[in-house]
Image (spheres, rainbow, N blue to C red):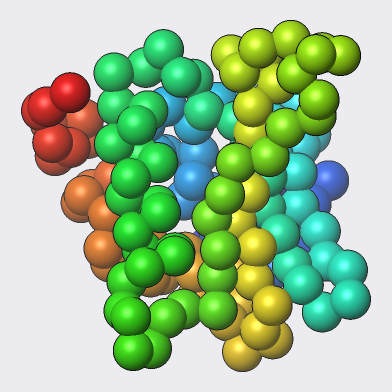
Length: 139
C-alpha cells in the first residue's frame, strides 16, 4: 500500500514483503522492536532473513516442514535458489533451542528477490497462512 510505513523500519525495504508474510506464519516469534524479531541482510551476493520459532507451539514442526519443502525441495529438477536451515551459536556456551535456535532463509540468486520468495511461500503454504485451521492437524 502506497505511503504505508512498515513496522520493519530497521530492515532494508526489499525485505519488508517477506518479513510481513513471515510474521503471519504460526509459531514465528515476533517482538515490538524496530527489527520485529527478525534479522536480514546481504553479503557477497547472498541475501538472508533470520528468525526464531516458538518450538513449544503445536505447529512449529509443521512450519519447519512446509518451509523446508518449498524452499529446499519443491522441485528436484529445478530447485529454487533458496535454502532454509537452522542456525545456532554453540549450545554449550549459551543454552538450549528454546532460546538460541534460529532459522535462516538464504538465497544466492539476484533473480530470486525476497518479494518473489514471499510470493512462492504465499502460494504454497496453507492459505491464508495465519488461519490456524488451515494447517494440518497432526503431530
